[in-house]
Image 1: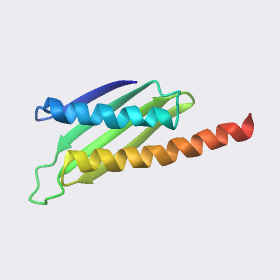
Image 2: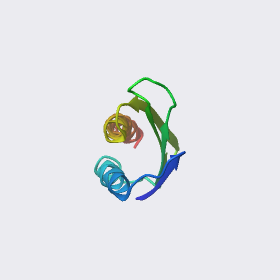
Image 3: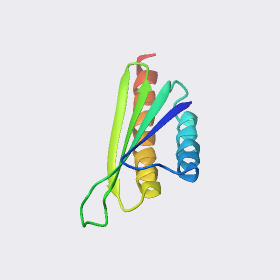
Image 4: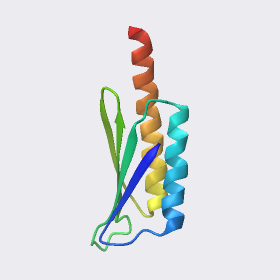
Length: 100
């Protein structure tokens, strides 16, 4: 799966990009028709510890799926986003089986 990582107002290191790629590749186990994923990493300028924002836009046939999470670290955000996407993809796969 093609994963585009965009970090806003900072440079993401290669370790973080590799981590994101590995997590996103696991989604193909749940739904094989994923076309690509856009991952947006942002840092909010607040005194709050939970200032890391991760948005993932997953392009799949029949419409895109979008998830947005705010956490203390980008790794935690990516984990939560991927878990949420897994649930959504499983639901979508079950719905498509019901129509087949």
